[in-house]
Length: 371
Ligand SMILES: [Mn+2]
Image: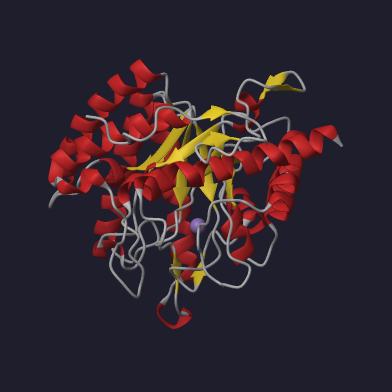
């Protein structure tokens, strides 16, 4: 089935084009400093914001018009997968990213959920082969289900710690199966609301143990992707343990994990921490810890994680400066952890938003290199 009927493919047309479904600056084949723009940027589409989420917010229901949502269960997962690969191919990005439950519905038991994941992963492999798409990273969602109310690796329940470990075990197997270039840990609910009911020492030790188990299991199954931690200072908990790159780096050193991990730096998480995006990129870079980027931006007047598509050219210029000074992102890339606004509910808006983000980073790299 064709899900985006009005769009054939997105091409580079240059600054004078009036076509909203065309790149004005991003020319995947243009060579800069010996590398093509595609090789510099390594763009990725986020499965969750683009194909799974419905635009609901604390004040109202979802607004997104997503034709695949007329299905449910595994039929929905399969339709989404088909729509996703049509989108990736038409947009012309090389990578995508997902959480486990973005791609397949969660069931009552982990065994059943994993069975769903296996069915989708098998199909995904075929789509990846025929489209040449690659998986930048996958991760485990350990924050949506109520079982994670007290966190996952830092939960006060041994059962939940074990359940979470089993989810990551499966995630690493999927990463190996699909050739994921990185595996990401975002703390989700790894943090606390009040010290009055929190054993911080135990929770940090458990987090450290959890990461060591993941490293050991990756070795056991010969998965060689790069491990990444994505810092975020607050939201959903008041205090998240992976506050920013500096505190995350101290944590990794304290638990002897600094050789096994790098950071996935998100722009909006940087600003939530009271830093600029470029500060976080620089801090990671000078410590040899810059692994990948979640390319988005916050709203300057709002204090939460709005995950907007990046269109601030000053920010993208300073970010690309850090990335180019780093000699690129290695196995990382620029993943659009960004969502269209509730008012941009038509499927075509997904293209417009990604084009704006890709052109903005292309402008950032070009300004830096030409100056
Ligand atoms: Mn965010």
